[in-house]
Length: 126
Image (cartoon, rainbow, N blue to C red; front, side):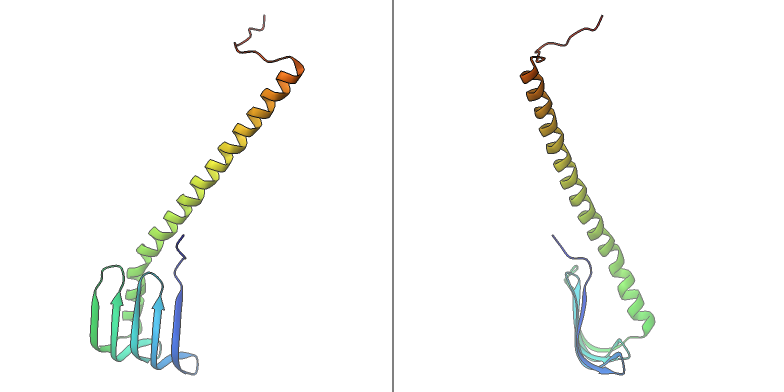
């Protein structure tokens, strides 16, 4: 089962911002390695989009707006991933519910057989 979006940054900081050389990995979606300035790709670096296979290498001058666009681009992919995860969980729960129901039906049949109430044909109540 895939994780939800997880962002990992390893590198230099200035105060609390990514600043200097570092690596950013957002699982299953992409990575960037190179220079950062105030949480933005800024300077020489390499960006890899794991989804499309696109690789960009060179000088980056991204602004906060550019970074927001990047993560908004990822949002539909994250949403699709979450929907798939939710669907898998729902199917698993339905399967477990079916097993529980079949088990309970089996218990009722066993109880009826022990009490002598078992029948193979439907009974009409007059």
